[in-house]
Image 1 (cartoon, helix red, strand yellow):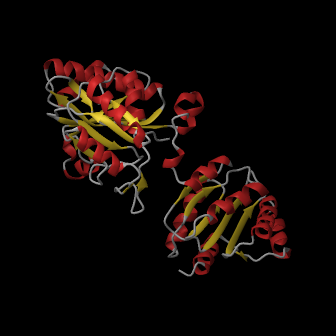
Image 2 (cartoon, one colour):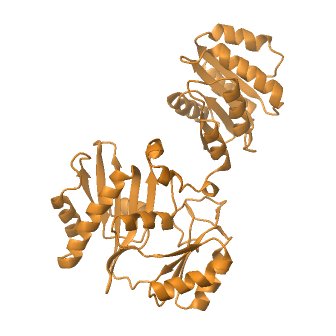
Image 3 (cartoon, one colour):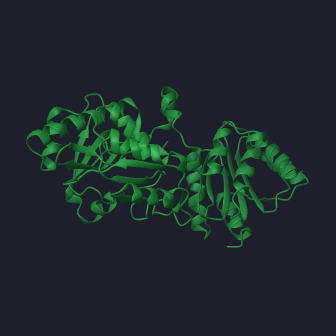
Length: 391
């Protein structure tokens, strides 16, 4: 689960990490109070206006504006609020800006990149820093990977003092700044572990003449499987920033991710779903989604799966690929029949069922008064659905 920058900063603040503070507004009627707070209570001479969306690269898209005066800040807020912000991460459709952060301005000197995530190859957390902050870390990794310094952290031990010292030294920090950096790194790792984060990122962490090190931006994602232990974190979820179909799928415990293709997929099991998308691509098609209906699929599950898949107007054909292990194929067949009768689908549907009671399921489908295309095996199903989609 993702959260906004202003929410991430407030969490960092709880862990005694210095942040670029400010006020986040959702309506232009709140502007004057926000400017007063930043100017008078935070003592900032200038303002930084920052669009709050769940995507990086906001600055290049016009989502971050330095504003030396109240007048400039007001003008930038008016332009930004409600705009459609397009970045590399939003895609061409962009994301509407519903929240704007009015933040304090700092005189920046050095800009660093700091992040923690899981290194799956080692089974340990990896703490990364780079002297190339304020830019896309993917470009740094591609062009100058030696500028990214890593420390592997054993979860049971935590970030050790010598590791925090190594990271600070890698950034060229000395004296009081190095000591402050070590404290920030230690607290950041504590936040990462205690909050069950999947990634914590500060880009940039900056040095300033008067305030020391400050987190100018923050990104935090959480492990959704651990949210039941953090109801206060779950409450930070912003559904406006998520795909409506994915939100709807979550209501029915369906694992759905929208893609760019036109072949809808309904599969049970994440591994089979990935293999299904692969074979569709191999046959010249393009999957429109990842949809795992799980092992407990029933009539309602299939109906809801169809509704969610077909909410995407790009879908030209649907492939149902079910292996009956935990769930019986005849049960899925009955769900397919009822869904096809009730929903009056306008796109071709290819069905491949294998496993428990597959023969019974095929007979049910053959005798049902519904329009579908039966497939004998995995490859046959992919070939038929790609042809049905007109690819």
